Image 1 (cartoon, rainbow, N blue to C red):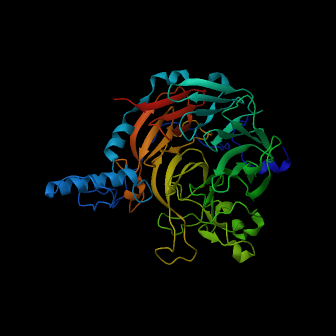
Image 2 (cartoon, rainbow, N blue to C red):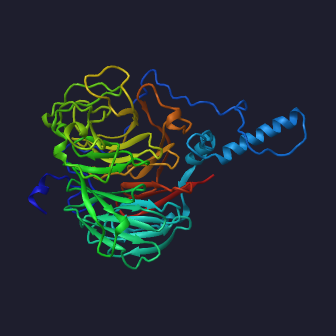
Image 3 (cartoon, rainbow, N blue to C red):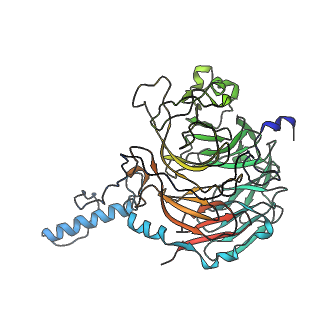
Length: 501
């Protein structure tokens, strides 16, 4: 490793997915969330009434009369909700009672005891294939395991998938997936031929921690502790690799995510900054020197978009609601950069480290897991994306995020990164909590985030807590197609959860 890597963050001393070590008192006990602020509004709208106008379309041929007319109207209404599955009509939008019942009845599956990876080291990442037919497991000891999540049957072990810890897995489609490792490489695999890699990708100078995929351009996007975000042209890959270029660079890079529509890139850092690239264009390489404001002074933001007092720590101070417009600095109008220090409850006077970063499946919000610089507190926070002009005049440009929900975590397993996840419908968050997991909702009815946005910052509601591991849970993942959840822990066991009545 080069001398320049001395400033880069480390996940763990021996190569596992662990946060950079910080000094501070040990505190492993669970904490409860503070009471909701007064004035919080979390009521969801009632179910659609029969007064909703039926959609035009084919109707059953029945006789006349008022009763027949009502039957025809009801049929058209049901047909409309069943067929139109676009942005404006979601058949499950109002089914909070059914979803709440399913989520609150989650229990460990009887066969999940077979999903043991103890000989393969800690479980750092779990990923389902898009059709839910395969569950992949990234292991500390250089291997990748594949399971049938329905039968809990072991399918395949990719021995020596890498030469160091496997950190992240990403499916490009139902058969092709990518893995990344502390050996600084990315590997492409095909489910139809798992005896060998499709190809290995070389380009990072340090541990590779994150993989994303732009479905519009078919570019693979990776980030690592060398501070680089690299794009790979999978349209032209060969056995020797595929064309790549450095897209962006920033120090202390921790995690990188693309929004579902690939219009934004979010990057979290160990220094507590959150970078947002708007109007994303991955075909252009960006020079960090073009963004002078990255080196400007920054201050944290309140939940209403205002600025707080400067932090005590010198290098973490400044104006942090700045949106940078590259076209003003001589480069493309795309990829405008915003630098934020998200508000963390209880952390206004000291810094924090953003370790886990996820996006709402509908692109409405971002979810982070963060810890204090002293490492004695840990939080899960949800931030709503806000577009357009601010609601009141500000000295600086608008803030893109507003803290809507939060909860304090147990802070067990100090130093290790805990990966959260959203449910496929975005109603639920699964959060590692000590030796188990917590299912968290935005309100008591598992409502849609858009239906229960509070006026003031609110506490996430615990729907269910399940303790089924003998060690600290590090990663969680919902199945995209089944009502199933998976979690993996430090000792190497994978647990599956499903409704049990």
